[in-house]
Amino acid sequence: KYFYIGTAALILTLFLVGSKLYMNAQEKKLSFLAAENSALFIRDYSPRFGNKDAKVFLIEFLDPECESCRHFYPHIKELLKEYNDKVQLVVRYAAFHGNSKTAIRALEAARKQGKYWESLSLLFKKQPEWGSHHNPRIELIYGFLASLGLDMDRLKEDMKDPSIDKIITQDTEDLKKLNVKGTPTFFVNGKKPTRFGLSYLREMLTEEVNKAYQ
Image 1: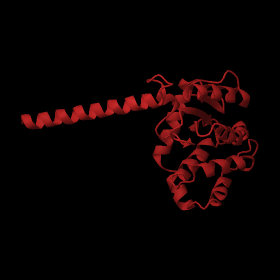
Image 2: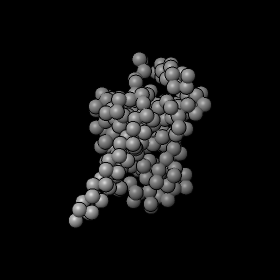
Image 3: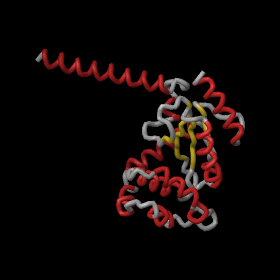
Image 4: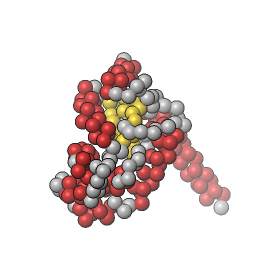
């Protein structure tokens, strides 16, 4: 009896120690954030683009149906190239438009087939056709995504995965706590640029890169 109690206690202790070490590693990795706030900016499930070991995090709350997000996206990709793998992009969702959740579900389903970034780029490129605010036609996204060679039957089935709705719900809760009211909204290592625009974003990225790699 005492042996079993001791074994259970040991397992619990090892679990707690392991959890603490993991949290310490996460805090060190995201040292720019207070421990209690780190998850507000970056969740384990959040899509990341670029060097996964980059010390500077560009967090973007975006909406696939947002026209400004579409405009910014290619510039953001080019901006990342300027910093030679020192910056990674983290995508968070802000489902503010009518068909946003459907588009997000499609993106996450495409992610299961290893084509998340290709799908995001394509949906932004074709957004005027499927996401027009005057005449939205969300059904068109399936034809566009099929052109990437995705298994569309699997994609449509994966879109029903309840975990995707949990992602959308969690991101929505986080954006409210961070007072995100429009898209795209950017944070660089947990800080918002002083003003909205690529030049201000570049300025903050340069500042954080210089600090992280000095």
